[in-house]
Image (tube, rainbow, N blue to C red):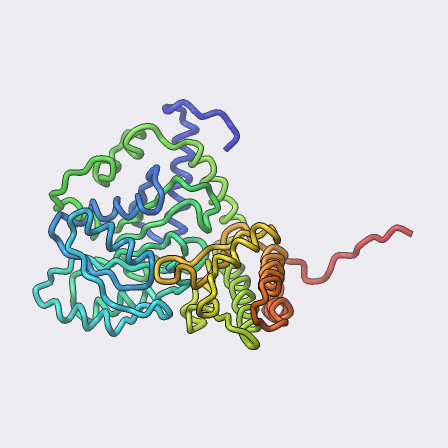
Length: 384
């Protein structure tokens, strides 16, 4: 990013934009259209909602935690009739409940189901393929719209194969860039639905941004420095290999879960997501003892141990803290974080098992060497 911007008509800029679009298609695993916005993930929500919903049309939002609630609120403020499908913030979205809900919509009023793949507040990840199967089993025409802001690049996601119509990502999570870019992937079915929507829009409009002129891709001046960062990050992901990147995230996540489980053996801490197969490989939400303000853990870790932790959001405010394990992260970094957290827990006098770090190390050791690591240790020269 530390470079001069390019002239808007410079062919090099067009090449950078096309490179980003091509690699984002690979990340989304789609042959559909990809749009880049100068916005955060909430801007991505609005781009999707503005294109596929007219005011008064109906959206169904399965509850997963703070971000599903925020997305539903966002939709209501755009005049969309938004229904919440109740859920359990410690469990993934229930496909059977989704199927039953859609079967109850005999008039077909629900235009789209808005699902959060990995809710960063609860640390819960849902099975997108199973949700598409539930929609199909109900023989319902609803579009499937997935927020993959926290999962894109960190966990497997195959938009076309899984039957997702619209997917929303952002630059600041596993894509390792600064905040400021949002991405929308839309398949032909979603594009066709957008053409028929009679909602005033311009900046978010897919049809306008699909124009042949380069500047129309961004509805004006391109966010060049964000694109420079995005291209570098996507090149890094391509070099490591997307499957290897996802494998790395899964290994580090399991190490965190093992550490928290070890702390909880003799204490009051536990992973919020109850089932390991429903846990996000991007972030782990850790519940703290009843009556204890989890903000104390965050403050002490930041001020005394030099580690920044996430806080509880929504219903988990003051009741949880979060460890993010996505992006440019490796084993020493996550082990250092876990060591600092365990020190913090001891500093604050919280009951916890003493084997968190050994459990994390054992998890990493038992899962084998990361892809690309040398098969045998390199010799180390020791001065005489």
